[in-house]
Length: 597
Image (cartoon, rainbow, N blue to C red):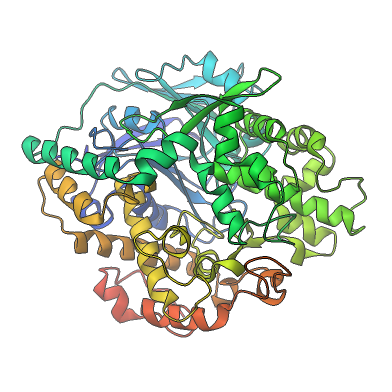
């Protein structure tokens, strides 16, 4: 097989069994790799009887057929599992170098199941797969572990958890290449529950395209598009992902102080422009990426590292009422070292600040207290004091204090940096997300704000269901190939289809890819339905549905979710309860995976 290595590595930590089995070519064609393959494997391996932190849950690392091909941004990979934070299907992807290196070991996926009887790490090299004692690593931070295991960007790559994962914090991330994160939904807690500290890879095989000349031509064509796009050639390289801070703030969709307002008066101080001017050391790129959006930053105290990204800047910034860029940046560094999801961490702190200000939480915590960030992050990673409550996620924390409505979550996953009252389509994205509130499952920033591919009315509701569905399908297929979504902002699916054809030697059209995306989306929906989720879970916090924004460009608006949701189910080919109809499953070649009565 070209594109696919054709092999799945299966490791059972309970008994030390290590097996290699073939990848079914039909499943490869239907789900490609990455997120799609991860969902398909998880469907078979982890049913509703399995608790997320039990040995029976699986961690499934999946690459795509494009991974390590040298196509632009072909560095990414995916992890799938059942989420300890939400109970939904979990999928998260990351860039860097680890995914490329794993693909070069000659595998498309790694399944880790069971639980080791002591701390363990896995080494995968040309010499084979070895389980090693990690007792001396347990308790170490991400940075310490990465260094101890010999991270060497293009040769030896380390993936690991920090104290948060070891302590089963439900927002724990898995970190790779020191500061890249597989974050949302708590995959680090699943890894920690298995006593698995790290996975180190060294590969030597190459993902050689079936048609080298066609591949070279597509490299040239997609490269031209990336260079021609102002976003990927100028905005992201110059200012990073935080380039949109001021843009989102100016339209009144920048959530502030736990979504109580939609504009932040300190936005200019934490913007991409401010990062470039005040703390930027240099740009950095993931493997085979011409965009180079990563920031290497240095604060006034001399601390240096990657970030912060847009979502992180918002989470520790506007969400907490903080405009101290150094404090935000150092909070980001600490989360990376502890192994924490920065979006959820900042969101949870904002929720705690509101609970305290309302007298519902016995604490002197208040919005704007930049000096509290470091202690709160450490407390969460080690489950110390209030941190033990925060480690459970904002919904459980707020529920404990009698105010679950103050948790800004959907399906218990903390919302990202967009107030959907100012972006109606984004509200539908958050409510219907398969892993919960997620901007990566079909972000409407492009059409509702950036005019990509064209500008649509951000306050309109009619017709949004179709646009959201297409964006969700597109995101699913990009996550399955696995490409970076920034590349997709410059390069259309037709170019990815032609590249995939050149790599695999099998014909793929843009319609084929979009059908894969729809298939993946529906399978994830089926997984959640099997777990007991219903249409009642396709919702948003009461604040966003019932409390209009008080002032600013989005004043007076709430999310008009009900009519969009009804239209969405119809567009999807689902019944009024949000369940895919049998004819839709047959159309998508998912028959036999129906949910029982």
